[in-house]
Image (cartoon, rainbow, N blue to C red; front, side, top):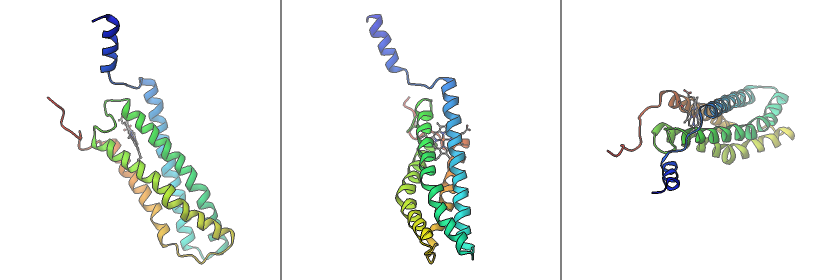
Length: 175
Ligand code: HEM
């Protein structure tokens, strides 16, 4: 075997890894995106529960209008940043994307929450914003209680999975 062929074979067999500095930079971005995502969830909860509890029509209208602004796009950006950096961290390390339960579960949570923002939350808050603009505030808010509960709960599950890394490998290693 020529030395060029040998080099090519070795490179192909060697898994791709992020360099130490790049990995740290990506990890910082990943954790920052998680922090901002959780922060937006807190703002969403404050606005939703204020709108539900207040007797003031102007406060309610303001909450309806601001909800759309602070949720949909900021959440989508945080969710996608978290997804891309998480996938890079997983694929560029020994963890891989589909080797460990905790990584696969986090991937599912991230995809589910990002999809819910666009499919379920976006139309709901868009309608509320229109109603806030028109001062048409007699709207049942029952379903709006779910996003500020479901999103931070699943994000906290993902944080716990990241720190404890439970259950190990998805498949047993071949001997
Ligand atoms: C669902 C949203 C997510 C949250 C809340 C989250 C949270 C976190 C946190 C807090 C860390 C830092 C853990 C530590 O340094 O001890 C971390 C690291 C990590 N995350 Fe995520 N993550 C999420 C999505 C993802 C996704 C989608 C993937 C990949 C598919 C992923 C893969 C990783 C990997 C590989 C690490 C590095 C673990 C290590 O080196 O110890 N994460 N994540």
